[in-house]
Length: 390
Image 1 (cartoon, rainbow, N blue to C red):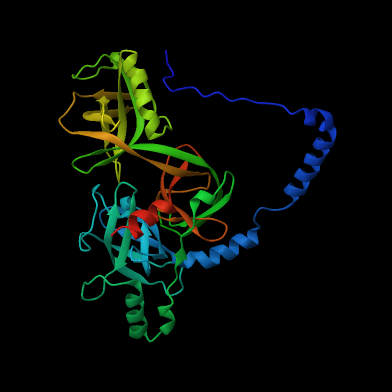
Image 2: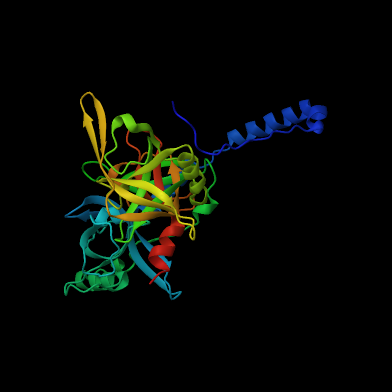
């Protein structure tokens, strides 16, 4: 039998005596106002077409010889020295296989193509920064001498080489504020999904925000917690199927509320572990067994267990091995934008725009087979981790 270990919240509804007295008139006023509101389009197709024409040239195709293809965008921003700068932004998992931070410009290179811009410029670019925790990366072009250069220098050289000085005005977009987005606000997505990496645009709405917890280790791995497993006892040996009481999607819970969940489960005499995927590619399932709560920091401490999931013809099975030496802590959370705009795999790293044409998020992940379950990191995270930090 499933048991809900999460704290319950109560909602209180009150009525107003004024409404009782003037209910008919208020009802008529509300209906009339609603009809007028419905008659006004939130955003016309013409408006979106104008935004598309302005923003599309700055959205680029990213090609990595080791990872595959994804999307990115050229952005103008203020750096840590409060100076105007330019760079190409994408998701970390689009350009790197290994979940580590990159500060060496020559550590990895990819190809960037401006397919929606008339010159169809293609360049080789270096991954100058890659933050696995926020799954964001910053790229800069490489010149013929294999040196990393700024975008203005690259395009000035390109303009002189081709005697086409219009190339100096390379396309770019600007960052917005995702906190200003409310439920059902319109957004649109540009990128290169699909098997042929064709340019694509889709319109949708913000359907909500989702807090997600992460575990990190001293070795630098960053794991997004996706599911939780409640099992009997506190065995350090292999966990059998007969010991598993419950497997469910990890709750959308804040970091400061996690200790209460842990105490509830442990207090009931059970044990708890989380299933996660290693960032940025998340191509391996990792098990994190809860071993306690640090008294000084209040953080939940975890220890790794090997996990194998078998998706067979007659159902799925799971094998959970004994605890290993690698340990870590569930020590931070991220809040994702949840969108109902159609998004494909190649959209990863591409921009989410508000109706003013500002970037409010970056496409990161989605839930297969669940329409509308697409998630984006926020513009604020990008600015803090890529632009404001040295």
